[in-house]
Length: 211
Image 1 (cartoon, helix red, strand yellow):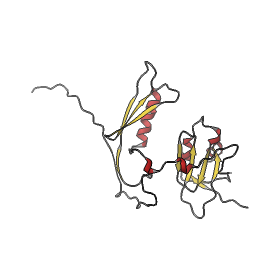
Image 2 (tube, one colour):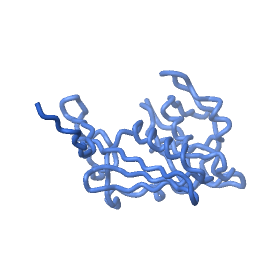
Image 3 (cartoon, helix red, strand yellow):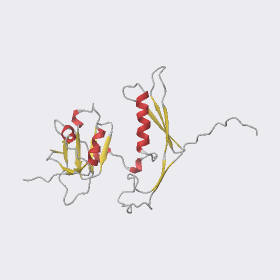
Image 4 (cartoon, one colour):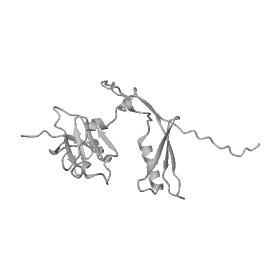
């Protein structure tokens, strides 16, 4: 019996970033199903929705991480995945109910919209300064719409403090907030606005000179 295969694009493979190097072997795989491509190491989880699918969906499958790493396509190409393994817990892999593990939007406590590249740059700076083996940082959200990042430091070590402003975003292009069962209208440049905030940085006055 022939088996219908999953077809994935490059963006789908971003889910692998949820799996750290020392993740349990039982979680070193990606799960592909109707809701997307999912991966976890039990500390982090990423789900990327499916690329456009034509016709009936295949059965959910899991694919070992080392196998998947070798299959990542380049550019806009797509890759036809092998048959894969049945998406259920076995002696080799643990497959949880991902739908239960991902919280519902109504359970969120607070939100902030932020430029991901800027946040990555700040966090990389924190990693360069801290000597902690797990690169511990603490993120604090402020009512003025910014994030402060402080890195762990040993006794006598150098301190790291970073701040990055949130982005004032007016649109519906970020999923996770829409009520269940609703479909937002198509995105256009006119339907969303995006403007990064600015930190309040009082300026010291210089010397005043008389004419």
